[in-house]
Figure 1 (cartoon, helix red, strand yellow):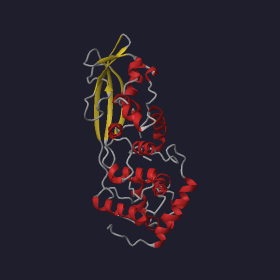
Figure 2 (figure 1 turned 90 degrees about the vertical axis):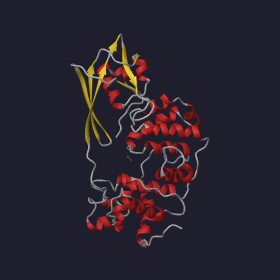
Figure 3 (figure 1 turned 180 degrees about the vertical axis):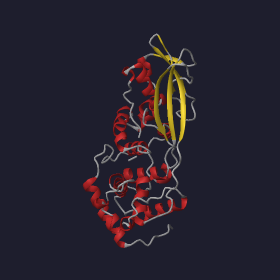
Figure 4 (figure 1 turned 135 degrees about the vertical axis):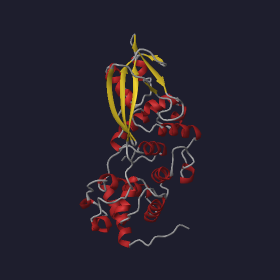
Length: 337
């Protein structure tokens, strides 16, 4: 039997009444909301991992045009799946979606069964189960953790197991008996729109009367996320090799980072064509593109290259040095809810 928390009635009332009321008035109109389709909910939740809503919108629409059903995704070639994900980042998400689609004929409705699928952890399983199937399943993501840490004045590092256990207990305790999907989405929406990481709009918050952080002036101190991880600088040198209207690219190994994607071959020369700077996780990456003469790889025309899945930085470099004819309809920025 789960441990029960002795929460103040006023706090429970604020979460169960004031928060849903605020959500009905202020929620954003998003293409994956209001549609009880487990496949679409699953796709949206995977895309929203580590990625902002505004970035996901167009990717989500394009994905559903290409793969409108679970069956169509399961039949798709892996290369096409990666191509449709190009620019969204964290490509293991696309590979796990594809792997899971091949394993099932219908999307499970319960958290334990959902967590058996690749790429689905406790949070994502709870989101799918509650939103698509109205199961009583709690969720804790970065937005929810921030709301709980501030409202309840939790000073522990939210990344540590002990604090995570507290957060999940709160999520379980506050969850209503019905309309759990809307409640969970309201929590996430509050974190995205009002209880933001910096300069939260406390005056607009439906939980302001019961928020410990607001009462004590701790909004900027919470949540405690520990010591920030230092970023490291990395430089990648690659070659742009062109001959008779074709370009030389190499395919990355089938396992590891950016598995199976196409990129410029590694190398450098005396002629620097372009420098692109971008960040992935805790790495600050400088991609230096040099003019080259020869390397191992395969030749592609402009049209063929446009159909390949490439890392976003390499795609940007290709467009910059070879012209806009290579712009991909699936390319875009990667920046969470």
